[in-house]
Image 1: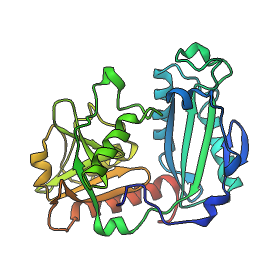
Image 2: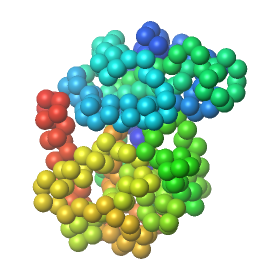
Image 3: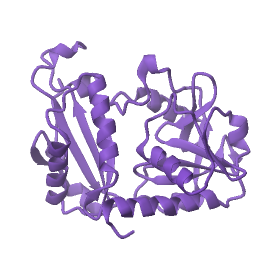
Image 4: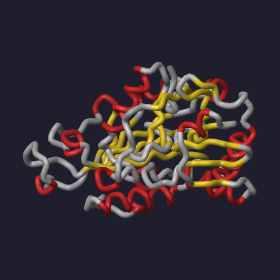
Length: 304
């Protein structure tokens, strides 16, 4: 079994320092209270980012999503994006990281006075944690691709829990992942409430048909930074791209399929429900991979 977050083993991650509310803690000592709203309720927002040449790729886009999400749920980070960047820089420098590093930035509503739901019980301010690891995505997946299974768990309606939130409340996706695992696949391909193809449990999803790039309408999917960048790059470089409703029928017979996410960038899909996708050639995905690497180099100044 593989996942889109498979990384090469790196023994240095056993000794990383983790940022917890302004302090750097050894991995074994980096803890939060059992009364924390994130632990009790999944009440929090997070961002995943990658470090290239000492700079976080597409930092402004990630911060736009992060602060928009926090604002929408009345969660005050207690600092602006310059403060977030300072905390990230502090953590990266303490761990000697400049490249091939992945960060999970997590903000919760903080420690609660009592173990109950109401937000007013969080009275001591937010909890901010930064886990930063040495992280090189597995090259094996780029060769063999990932196996998906369409699952009964769906991406819900925005007035239930909007999928655009990168929230700590991930049970919906965990259930989908379990269903895919039970079906013998690596990850889940989730549909929207109308039965159209949406995302996987962890990443956004694209197919290629006759030279055209298709992805979901975006109505029910994760507000992916990498997704938006791939759509932008395709449009700027003459690749027809459509955000539209389509069914498993079109996905099964696609010429190519791939996933997008900050960690793995673009990950090829080998099969859906046991049906091979295309003939193994992925010219559109490979072109987009090169365009994406160029965009990262332009944004960060890193040599890729």
